[in-house]
Amino acid sequence: MVCNNAKFAEIIRMNEVKDAMKEGLSVVNLNQGKLIMTKEKGIKTIVEQSPAPIQQLSSFKDRLGVLRDSGDSSLASFSTFLKNGLSREALVTLDAIRNGIKAYVKGFAGDIALSNDGWRQYGKYNENEQFDFYPSLFINPIGEQLKLQEMLCHSQLFVEYVNRKERDSKETAELSKSDVGRFIATFVYFHWRRRKRIESKVVV
Image (cartoon, rainbow, N blue to C red; front, side, top):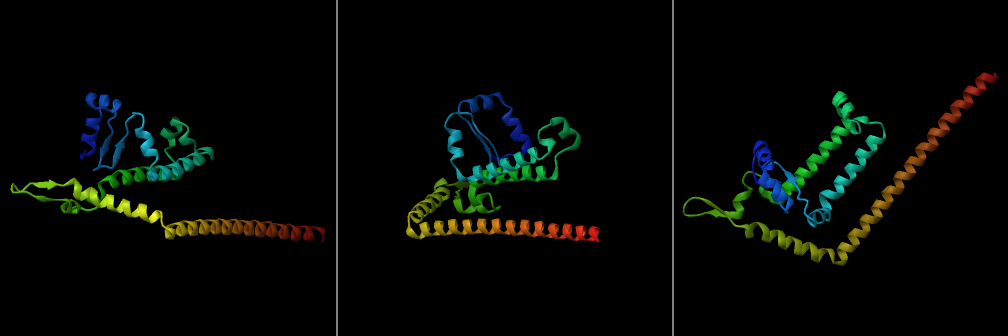
């Protein structure tokens, strides 16, 4: 559907829509970037197999868990949330989750959602001056791109690209570990020297 927030909320509250969602209906609002998923078996699995936004949302979930365990009690106590609100870190994370879901849902509409005139290339005006949308004009290029990606991912060039990304990732991780190690060593040495200077002054 394409509607504003008020109309979207009104439709979701309709008993007919609630009953239909129990039978497999999912509601997507392309205009607002909102998705309400059905509880029907199998649909959730399809969404979870998508690389986006599940991986991104999983990292955000882990971040919220760290914030909760680190003392951000507003995430664990509703009364504390009402009194103090969310911390800046939790607010930024929740906002990132909302934006990630919104971008994912709007991605269903491709470049139609990216510009005011994106729809023009997927249809034409008829003799009654009404615009006729042709789904094939929209979906066929997506199918061709998918075929190209499938061919590419089976090529030796792409395999080498993945291997190089793996090596770069490992090297970055090793450098990060070494940087942390140097920092700890420098930190310990600095405080050891400082303590020795203090002890020598006491002895004198």
